[in-house]
Image (tube, rainbow, N blue to C red):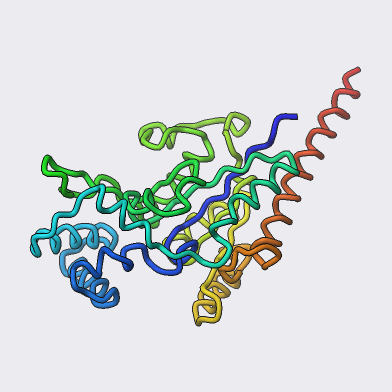
Length: 282
């Protein structure tokens, strides 16, 4: 039997990694503490009427130029190396893929993040993802950022869900809103599980949930961020609110395996129904 495709889709910062990817090297290299940088960048964005994600990308470019530090694509990739992940993340993909194979499921992993693709390319877990949809820069002739090439914000995340659903290319922006019959879509929303932690994930989590898939709000264990995740659960925006611990037999592991069991069972029931429908025509 051909394996059934399933998509596990993740935000990155504070969903898989313990903090923002820029906080490890990018911000300290400028001589800032993360909290000070983000406050200053957000103030600049508000003052100039720019959304915070686009504004922070410009502000990085601006400060690096101001300080005379050359920022290149290769350098950004190296900044992904020290990123730390929540417990269990680094072996999560191998374990859950193995469980999927047991159920005759072909699990594909994706990242949809407001972080930077160039940094994610250098992190330890990049090899496990079929694709990464994140913010990227245009680099000029001298190899430094010129301007954002792509910004992934609240609404932007939703379009990449649609691309995964339809199986269209990462850069096929013109066809993403074209009609496609449900039976032709590569991965139905019912076979998607979305992991996120914050407000930029809410539209995507709600979209997956409302279309029959599952959305998991994760939070850093033993912090007040649990309140935010539980609030999303109470507001009916997600199916689960779970601590970001991906180790075997922890809550995320148990919930996701149960969801995969359901997907496999529903597939099997569909196949049985098709066989019974054929009998009616005999």
